Length: 228
Ligand SMILES: [Zn+2]
Image 1: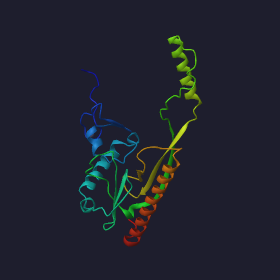
Image 2: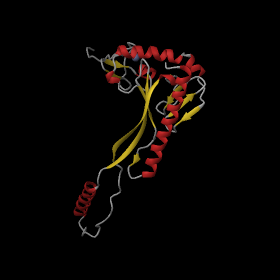
Image 3: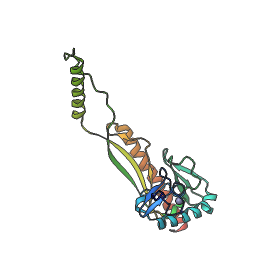
Image 4: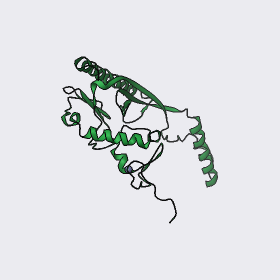
């Protein structure tokens, strides 16, 4: 007793379990509350408990909205994270594999989209290389010497390898919304190695195509309904 082991969720007041809680800007958020939040929230540590409370109110409204109940996909874009569009109702949402069955996906009007762009991110990619057996002719009668020589050779091979890079493609969708300023869609499931030019170009083309199609849908929705 006396130990401060009662870590309380700043939003619902329940105990925030050590394995499921996350840090907010000004407190802790329990696992149950995290699950209720949108999967599109990224930096919880920059968000306050008061903002999360507002966000959860929005999530309730979203869940019970006509937008969600009448949503009927007419077009899907992408094959990892998927943009679903309902052209008849001026709606769209993004589904991701982060949550297997999201019952409350954030739903938006096409006319809420402010701007879109393809983002290409280059990232250091370090695959595990098998070390080539280039000088196995060294005298290795002594087991210890053999091991040391092998280790040195491995280290040398690791050092002489130039860094390798890979690519991620994203589509950033700017939205006019009280809880979000953008929704980001990841296009490729796995990182694309720099050396794999055909995969790189194909993903780049795919991203541009998603962007062009989606932008065209948003523009025609704005002509039809006016900006939201
Ligand atoms: Zn909570």
